[in-house]
Image (cartoon, rainbow, N blue to C red):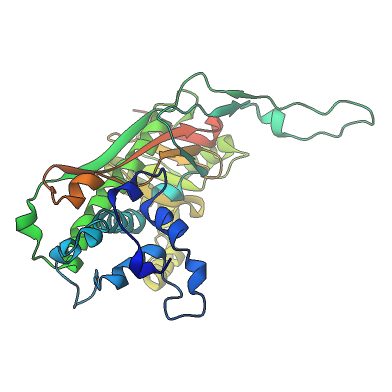
Length: 331
């Protein structure tokens, strides 16, 4: 079926797939290899069909989507894609999670393993002897999922003449807020995990010796990530060993500040005290996601933008408890 003859309707949002995936089944991109449309996905071909320009100085007004019944069906996917751009641009979550699990329900139970370091040391096994066992089991608690999003509060009349390029910026900001909320949720899951290691420093102000001692206790995991609040970040990043002459030269030449053990450092409002969360991002936490960006497609198609929601549903589950450590000051 040629892309310019496809009937677009609300039902394409209710297939259990994304709108673009549903379109790709009807109009596969592989059919356009070697043509001028190669490189466009099924949704982008529909934008071209209706001559809708969503970016650049010559972008169209929002009303261009609603010129026909078919083109109106493209609007929710445009909203979702713009929000996803904001999530991607501000995405810190993917930098701290070991894996992302996609689910199609609101109930999810992860697996757990032993946290005994000895269970991961592979000793020599004599011929005929049994190999050591590593027990896997379902966790006794479901992973808590939360909705993150915003509600559009604007009439169609108020935005129909606005250029799509500008409207995209507003939607990208929603994506940024979603990304920050998900990051804070991930940090909270570590703080609330009673199995996370606790290290208490020798004084109120962290020292290099404290971090070295915490590093040895964290072994065999690697300190890949530090997450802290506003109270501790200045103390952490101004430890003399991280601001010597060589570190200063590196900052001026690359813009990268010296960090403990070369780890990535993130700031969050979720930590309001002097604590520091240390993680081995390869083993610490699993992200659980129920679908992608969710838009109220029926309202958006019908131009009922006021009180139309845009959201994601995510949860976070610690994998190995000892792959995260909470460093606390003495006071």
